Length: 292
Image: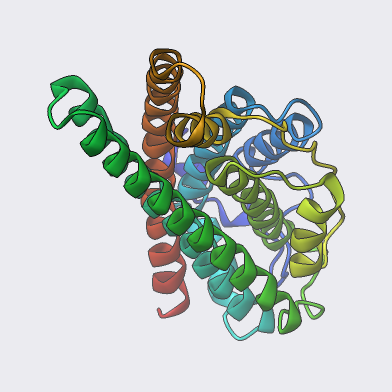
């Protein structure tokens, strides 16, 4: 895209809070990503579907990062730096980083425990006693992960009590876009955290939190499948520890689930790391714009 096209001030009204009647191509591109993510929220919420949504978030936030590099965007935000919604944008960027960090930490914790268990299973040293001790340790770690995820979601819920963006200019295309990006990102993060914890959340409760947080239009979200790779791994760990059936059968089941979760964790970890870097860059860009 030519530099002259990016820097043409005539694309903005002289002293307007809004982007032009004809949105910049990057605005349109971001909105297309948003619509695809909204549509996917009405489809399956299996682990493969959620992984696909995570990829969609990567595309969206890469587009947002490019949008923040435009001089037009920087000028528009700088002119509005005293408005109340600017603080909400900054608070929103922290919310996204906090939830993303919780997801990254949960995946890292789970991956480390899986490696320890798989190492013992491969060595076959220490026999049944050492293996059960490691599985018990893994089960304990899963409780820690679930507790951390529950706390992250509770902290997010608590912010709804003080969140107020009623002063936002709803006619501002740029600000409306950034608000919608936060809504869709948070809702997808919530679904992914539920996946990692191996629990489910109803369609209504999943989206009511985000809707209250942003005071925005509710978008439907399918309920997570009752069973996912993480919950199946939890079940396999419990089965090996307490089941009276064949240890060989339970061992095979456990190995199979470990392999499935290992592959899923790798995909999710890469996706969250990509998003974390983009979220950091976007927040830094926003701070730089507002401080100059």
